[in-house]
Image (tube, rainbow, N blue to C red; front, side):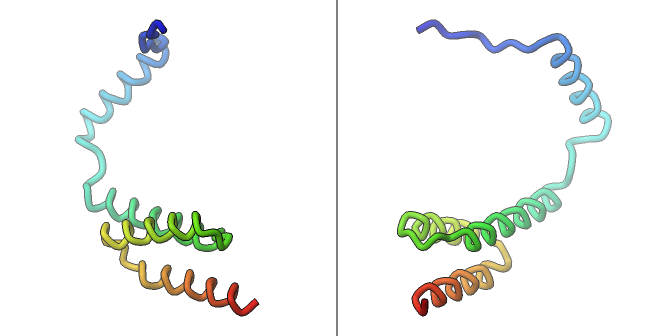
Length: 96
């Protein structure tokens, strides 16, 4: 199988050059602390969404547990609250 080379249009190349020049003028972008705070907030939102959408299957439980452990390892401040939400949801399933 022949490999295709990666190509971009002239318009895309101009846009990339424009963005590169803008980054050079402003510096390297946002500080790491800001990036990390935004990333942790997004991680928390996605994890809560996964807990809300949890369907009770073993596969989803394993995936959720792995995500919760990663979030805890990365320093997400409200992991305990998310675990509590999941435990409450599991308790409701068993009672039903």
